[in-house]
Length: 262
Image 1: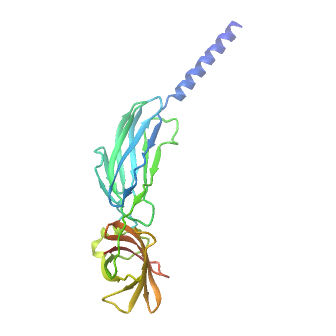
Image 2 (image 1 turned 135 degrees about the vertical axis):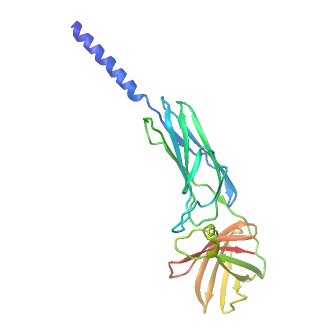
Image 3 (image 1 turned 90 degrees about the vertical axis):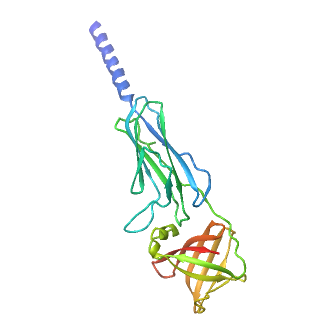
């Protein structure tokens, strides 16, 4: 009985030690505090937080921040203007790669940067993912994402207002920002927006069109030729004088991001 009791006690102690060892692990938790609604093309200031909520230090911590991408080809760029990047980070393609070293248990590190996002015909999201060379109790909270709310400007359109339209053409594009990355691709034309909702073209009187505003920061219009709709635009105010958006051509795979300035 004595030996049996001793064996049971040793087995129980070993089980406790094994369980304790198994529970000793780091746990990285990534959070991106939601940014306040910000106008397009204004800086969004980000602080990505990497906290170690485990009971063991996390060694060689890295943070990868995937930024919005352009839909250009073959070159892909960050969809926006990046600034104020934390010195521990470097831009690799469209991803910020950050080396944070060791984060002790119960401690955290913050990585800051700013980005000015353009008007786009698709959500612009930022995703951050942390990793460590140490074992972790769970990987479920190693990533976080934020899709900021972008505000637009009201633009007043007077009677017989001259619009200067700049645009490029391609497939899959979502923003006039993508046109500006390749200035030689941009062409332009003028149009006159009349108070009765019609559009005329000083340099091409055979074309026509109609425009409307569902709200002061929105603009819709169509271009017509021989009574047929040949182009359809939907855009939003990106400053007090201009709209940006996408023009679709019925029956075509091609589209044109437009900047329309009055």
